[in-house]
Length: 129
Image (cartoon, rainbow, N blue to C red; front, side, top):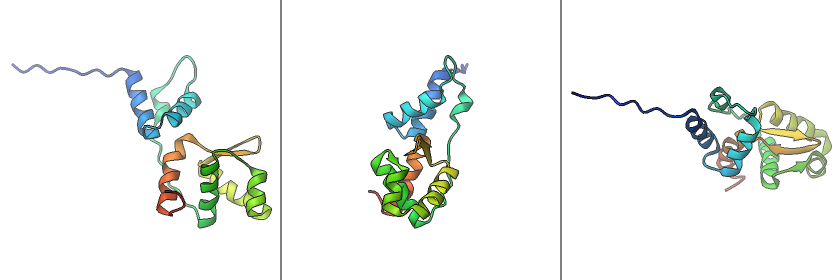
């Protein structure tokens, strides 16, 4: 007789596997995703859906994204000084609209969930390596 064994995977293991997949093994990104989506004392598995970004940026938007990535956190004022005040609002709006960055108290940073896709795009454009 053949016995069918059921491998039961704990919900916690599934959550950690999904976070690992999204963060591509980066512990800093994984921790940020965990802290962002944890609604203490519960975590729902549905909160950790596979996140896929369809990034549509022009070269200027990609360049600003690369600056934010390189600096980790940069003020909108600093970006305006580097790029010019008239265009930076439109560029930041496009990055916000696509879920690539967050702006908190005038400081821009890349969302943890978008880090992997952002880096992949910027590598293709040879803005980071």
